[in-house]
Length: 261
Image 1 (cartoon, rainbow, N blue to C red):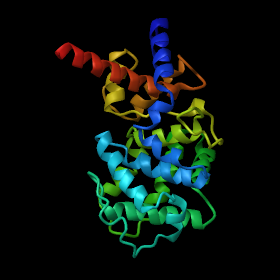
Image 2: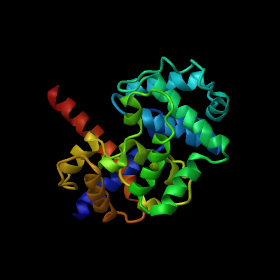
Image 3: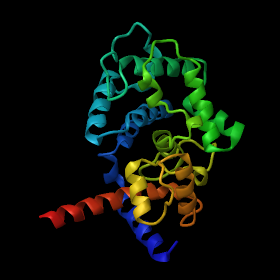
C-alpha cells in the first residue's frame, strides 16, 4: 500500500460518487422509490440483472418496471403463477420462468410478514459473516423452487458455497447498507465496514493493475483479498472504492481512445 495509491483512489471516489453516477447505473431503479419495500424489491431485481452490457440490462429492466407500473411491492402482492406478464422477459442466461419463480418466492416472503431485510438480517445474525449470510438467503430461494426453472435461475442467484464472487449480491448489499448520495443505506443490521467489494472482471483487472489484488481467479477468495486491502485505505467503508474502480476504468478507456486518435 502506498500513500499515493490511497490518495489517487480517494480522489476518484470524490469525483464519481455523486448524483450524476445514478442515471447510468442500475442503482437508478431503487432511486425511483421512497417506500422501503419498493426500494429493496426494486434493488434486488435490478441487481440480479446487472451483468453483461450495461445498456442491454438497463433496457430490459426498464421494460420490466414499466410492466410493474413502477409499483414493485404492489405488483408483487398481486402477482400469481398464472400471470404471463413476465413470461417473455428473457435476458442472456435467464428466461421468463426464472424471473417468475423469483417473484413468486418474494411474494411468499412478504405475505408471511417478512421482507428481504428480515431475511438478510436473519442470515447475518446466524453467521456475522457475509458469505454465511448470503448462503442463508440463496438457500431460502433454492428450497422454494416449484416451477421448472432453467440454469438461468441459478445464475441470477449464484450459490456462495461454490466460492463464487457473488458480485451482484454484494452490490445489492452495498446499495442497502452503505449510506451515501448513491447508496440508500436503509438497512442497519450490519455495519458498512463488513461489506465486501462487488468483484467483476473489470474491477478485478483494475485492481491487479493497481497492485491491489494478486489472486488470479475472480472468486470469493479474491473478493476477500481485495476487500482486506481496501480496508487498509478505509477500515470503516472499504466498498466506497467501488466508485474509484469505476472511475479508473472510465479514465483508462478515455486515455486509450485518445491515444488511438
